[in-house]
Length: 531
Image (cartoon, helix red, strand yellow):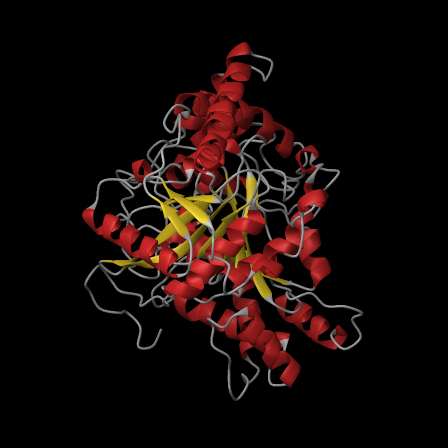
């Protein structure tokens, strides 16, 4: 069943008619081609932005709106054809072009765009009017020449509405499906971004994370995800949960593409005080993509984050062997102090910051029926058949009940959670073992989608870096029962260059990425003739 609004369907249909009326290039590029491969074709004169946009919009129609019906793309940009034509026309005269010039990217639907698309966080309460100003990262993408192809579905309100939600479900977009195995979760909250990139619906996408929402969907959809250091990428114009944990980051099919996207979106922004030091650390991250990047790197394995599955342990052992064969020094095991000593404090922090930050964000949006968390709670109750069909809003209600950010309980929880996860946790483990990075399986194989009972999450490794505000990178490592599993590399603040180098070295040695097969279930059959 489709949950997309009628207005969105109409715009998508109009765009599809416009774009698919043209004849595709004689030798259409692979939808899984890298940015470098696509730009090479552009330079050779065999591809342009309009043709590439046509390719992806056609795949959205065939795979996302019909066929497997992924529901990964919540809205296609109605101006995509015109934007692509303008980029093609300006290509020759552009004084300098980034790697993203003319490349179609998707944005998670909690990122503001001042155009004809909605910025809704997946909620029907937010579709009445578009944002009036681009998020800063969107401004950066547009300035680089990237084409904003559309918005991706997500776990509504970035999965901070209910304790038993289904990852990838929103009132506006319905349930996103995992393109590898369609009845399995795409994980959240950047579910649509992960599924769309995996399915070849865009060159790359932007996700956002508070705790796991870039890393988990990247891993479960078999792609690369980079969660940057908090403050490297501006959050202005992004629907918030927590100013002490939120960040945006790239999701791509390979490390090089993710590094190219991060290069464009990183940097200081006066609209986001947390980014005051970003310009001192932002760089061209593609400079760290070296074939010998793993040689001499010291990587510690956090066994306590690996869970209790024999098949995951075997994949971890295989990954460690790859690292060692490429010249890395692997220390196994490494103990991270206070690994589980932050969760209660994190919850306190998120509830307080969500109420404060969302109320502030809603004041920037005009023409909506809600202007505060309390009004949003009431709106959902009044529209329960569509918005609360499967699960409730108990996290909203808990957040509404907490006090201001001046409360001692909040301040103490913030201080304790940051100290234990960062200086006394990750930093301590790195220093004690003289490490460049830590390693653990990102998450086990995807669980079955269950709208009635919600997610059944297993062990994961991303929480500590998320709470600390430190960077992490997940890279495809292999498959378990048709389902992709990633390995997570994480380290201290501003360590993106080191992590990207390690992730690239691992990727080039493991060659674990595979395109999705669109299986109907584990061990089942593909629902399409040719992926």
